[in-house]
Figure 1 (cartoon, chains in turn orange, blue):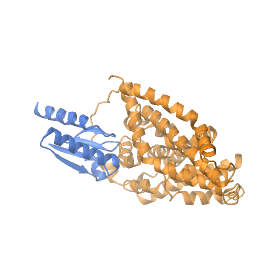
Figure 2 (tube, each protein chain N blue to C red):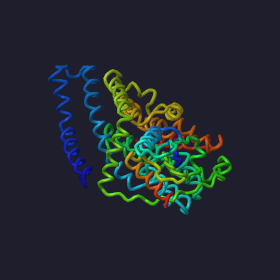
Figure 3 (cartoon, rainbow over the protein chains, first blue to last red):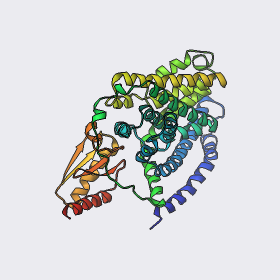
Length: 338
Length: 84
């Protein structure tokens, strides 16, 4: 029983591969063969989209969450804090943004993490780089982007997210905003708990992968299905180029409007990306769409409310303002080059 | 013995509280299980990730939800340390 998780993982991986490889032919068989639907009609197109994309995205989600679960078991906020201590500003921002991607993080821990970083003497801007990158670039976003758009858009989104996190953190450093942090943060003097690093075997780490899959997939599957259903409806019923006039390149106000709508909207990546996919397909431009998506995922109302416990109101506005400006610039940039 | 579950109320925090109560019931030890939801109070323990588990003011786990079996061992470990 020593390598229980490893054995199970190998078996499930084989099953996964078979499902993934035969999915398209199975859906084709079902839609055209069993249901005898006529190819090319709106209903067929919407139904086929849903029946193919939904299992495909769920399959991809499972495997990536599993892989990321294993990778994350090598990282912890404690190790990340150690790496970020005594680093010069810009290097600190870069490292914090990259570590934000791989360090396990949930926005419910944003406050303890913020305090722990501040107490260790890590500059505020560096801490913000971490807090921006961690939710924006997450495995769910990456899977959905890859599954629906391919690796190019995924790469663009990830590098754009990194750029925003690094620059926003860098700017916040320059603004000298320490006085807008709630005073109790500096006086709390917490006791760092004396826990030794736990030792894990590979089998334990594979076990973490399974736990992650159970937790994350059970939390987001419904959003994925809903998102894909809306996406399927847009795919089948909205006319080609319908979105071009609102969200196309020629509409200069489209990027700021997308960010303004996106910031208060809150959804996890799972729900928003299938919708974004359909928008893009109907003529919305890439920069505008990515800006919309990033402001929905990266800046969320619940997280800002949580952070209000440690940040005074002006700093909340500075934080949201700087990040939103970053997203805006990137949106225009992509519209200009694509 | 006082056991504290640190967490602002996310799903993980709730399942940690449930498992802790289960572990206490199985062991039959005399312990109070307390939920700490105040974020300032949580931060004072110096953990970077919720949920946290504190036994007799010592942080024994943070950032994950240990199994009932693990929690039992953590409780027994602390009792052994206290009596020695």
